[in-house]
Length: 62
Image 1 (cartoon, helix red, strand yellow):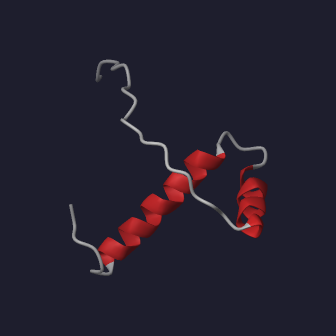
Image 2: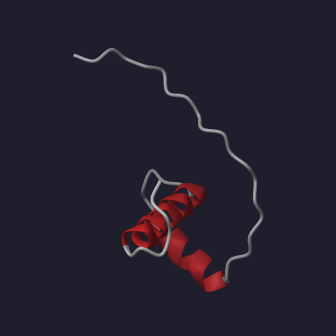
């Protein structure tokens, strides 16, 4: 059994971006009743998009 490790918080940087109102509304509807913040949803969506671009050969792999 693996031992418990205290998780570390990855370094972050604040970025201000503008979303169209309809996108904000859709994201907020998607996370209603879920243990998810707007930021966490957007980060997961961006990571998924980046992974798709890598798989398509449009971005270099890590």
